[in-house]
Image 1 (cartoon, rainbow, N blue to C red):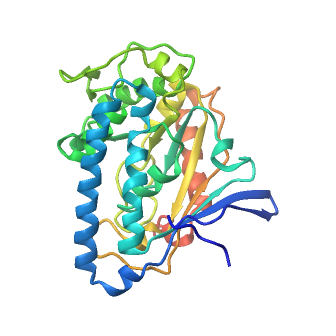
Image 2 (cartoon, rainbow, N blue to C red; image 1 turned 135 degrees about the vertical axis):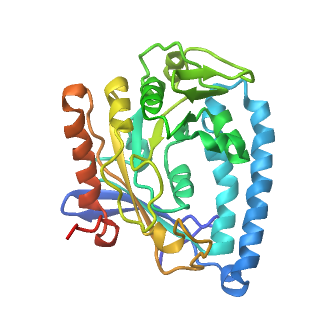
Length: 327
């Protein structure tokens, strides 16, 4: 039996298969609290800690605003505080694996990259924030700016887009791509900015500004996380065709794309319900696939590359998360 630490994190292991050795580790555990207390009480407790830990992170964020590297990892630092409550009150379990070509787990991921993941559950922000490298920021909907979690994302340097404005979103993501390009200079600012149809717009509350290229050059931002489906799936199945935002970003940034396949989360907590499967037998599986070189991507092969990304997810997702075939 594999030993587990007090935090719920099990020992890392290396699994051999036909393709080589995969680096894997497990997170979370079945909880006696989730087994004894009713779901409503568990939800109330986890929601209370959600907002309490978020308040702590926001206060800490004020102290680290001058430090770009710390701000870029602010969301992940908050997640490290919050996620133990998800294990304690709901008994979630996760299994994280890296393709055999990614040596040493997260240490083998590219220094700068665009991470694309399928979006099937409200738990995806937990799994992605917990497993992606420190310093990875996200592309998120602008509506979150009116919520406390959006304020923390703003402090961290996340990019906000208006999903109803397709052209504006594409322009914004093209500019956001520069965040992941360590050698490219840019005239945009990360902290305190939101996006309109004209691209970046500096907020009146923008405390610190500067070249994105300089920020990344200093190692402050490791990458961008994007959900190419655009929104959560209602039934856990992959939504196709993918939005082209990730491909536009890759064309601009010329950094690798790393597909991240998430399976099982929708069985624990779907989009249309507050019913959570406590101490579920389902283990949320997160797998980092081989990085994809984008150095030769341009507008002439945009549709082809977008379809290629779709096919990667179709091939790696379980049958119950693939789109239903049309009759």
